[in-house]
Image 1 (cartoon, rainbow, N blue to C red):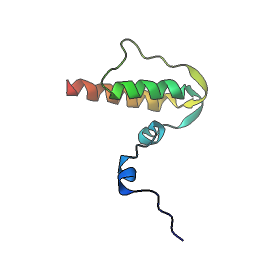
Image 2 (cartoon, rainbow, N blue to C red):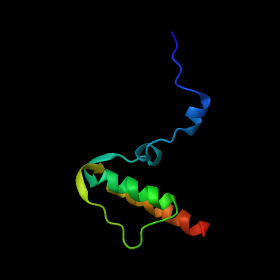
Image 3 (spheres, one colour):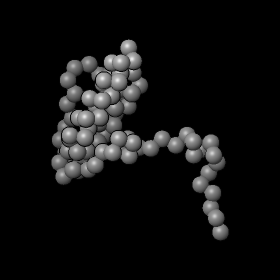
Length: 82
């Protein structure tokens, strides 16, 4: 028996979680995942927070260097759109 995974429209609207989209891996000690996700969501929405970005270091957080790369790239893309 075959199971349908939903309509074509539902599949087209699927947005992968940020960790999948940007290839974030989990580190023994890394950036707080919720903080990073919230920051990137705001950044992509066109309202980057002012000031220096600082995330708490927590157990099982996102690997720091990859997050730093992605944020730098997103800031660069946002600068080009202006």
